Image (cartoon, rainbow over all chains, first blue to last red):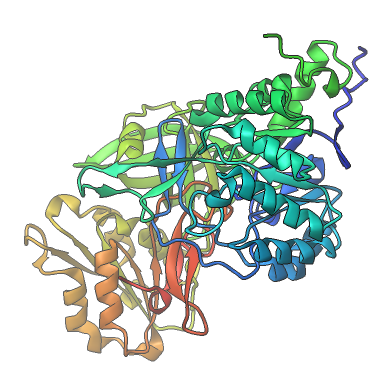
Length: 308
Length: 272
């Protein structure tokens, strides 16, 4: 490969074409605006926005976060401005950029998921939906929808009824057999699967003999969970034929490549954004360098090349 | 893009009093000038642990010919600050900032009252410096109430003496200054300050600030407080550093200490 030839980075996730496989993970990049002074949003594969519910959500009382070994716990509780305010106030800003916008959606009932999906379906500038059936920090919906294959499939079907947009279902790792859930949502019509959301965890304040988080439990993210995420992506890739998006503790290009080699068509960068606001761009540039150094012309030549 | 993470080089990192450290960092001159009340997220460059940056308010800032220097005054309270305290001269740190909404300045107010508890002196000291230098307040217009549990926790006094004429020191145990809570001491003097021509700036433990909130509840003082909370991103994205406030309709809402704050109006905060 000549020095002036750049590796081809575009990937196709069903109907959804991305200029590169690097997205932001929901809840770690706000509505995009928060990072626009750090990152040229046009360079991203996609922006997955903070989870949207039908009505604005207050979120959980503080403290909401706690640092852990190679990661952190959070129990934000899906604080968000609601789908209507997102469409009115945040989408116009995102439309200025040449970047795929993926709206992460959440509901407490099937009907709520459907209403949010319907509103976003007719909103200009949304390229796909990511259905959150995996938030561990809310009392209703969230995780409880994602831990039962029948219910996860039903949410998927209900959302599909309301939208022509590609539907990605985001899975929770807090289950016995994630591949079983993946297969169920694929059968129900999911266009893609993203995994993993956070792992439920705890941290104890030994001075107060009390939890560090007001919510007691929280979701663990960061490099600590990467080996688990890799194992689960591998299990799911073997089981389904729809595109899989790998998430979990990706801090740099090497981490992202591990997921791509296993068979993920794309990746999401989450907690890394918090300590390095340029993490997404660093991963994109790092993957390009890897491909260039290895004389690989197209990112797709690396995807699903795992030898076991 | 405009914003970036800077690599700072430690010029000094000394324990000035038991558990209280002063870190002086050299930064590239393109680093934006921090406004009083703003903070930085600091991490040890290149290390993966501690994982998250630590939010520390800016104590002083000066721009030289070839680089700028920033001072951070901090107390060792946990794992992160303990590791920070061990950093030696020439170590490199990642500095993200300046971040957050600074104190609002009201040049028309005749009297400035500062109320600080312990390490809360740091942002107020920068503010006092700014008001003297850039807003042309006279020393005689600024009164500083500084309190702590004990003499060892009264810090930053030398610098304050250069900035303010009228400094009142209190300790809970009477080992330095008057034996009183700083809030009680202020209450005794409160009639000296007319709400319409006074602005109060406060920073300290939540216990101190909640007492102050009760004290000033029915009074019409403009009081701004700088809050602390654990943070992950520092930029408003993660929603981790929530503080409960009353919104314009009187309903409970959570704001972000990192980006909506760290400076809030005392009376909008809901103190448990």
